[in-house]
Length: 247
Image (tube, rainbow, N blue to C red; front, side, top):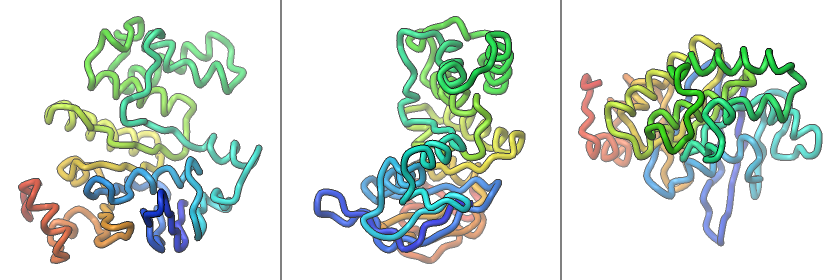
């Protein structure tokens, strides 16, 4: 579904991605892990052409998104939902209004149809009783769930998650992880997750790919990933106290 072909990206004179080639399969949860500055978020931004490769190509289905523009690019982006790191909720709008906003801006649905869809996704993320609250009145975990509701309200084929558990306590992080996995299964979507949280990646991912210096040094299913002998990936696992059979 999503394919990178020899993608290199140079930012500020530094090669952030280096000849990166891989494919994300339809319907899977594909999780990218790695240390700060390894190129995780840069990779994610290339998928929806928030960044353009210095060289190489990015494909979404049959569309070379890295070369698309205008209506063609807009049409590809309509296939995506995006959960930003901070949730990116509008502080002066209620949770309900934040979730309804994409429907009101991008569709011609009636008010009753908008209301029905918003309430459906709020229930999916466990916020059906919190729609009238402002973002400042709910917890960080609830804000992430509200951001996720907004990301899926237009029924996207693909959802991109940028550090979905960043800043959350371990219990809340695991709640978000379970929600990502459940929604991926229930909605039949493809999920691409960027995270520092390897414990969460092991819980949710079909495949985990580790970036280091702009290249994937390990890519495997969780049970195989924890058995890696690749030195940097091994050190990353050990730094988070993860051993084979511990997840």
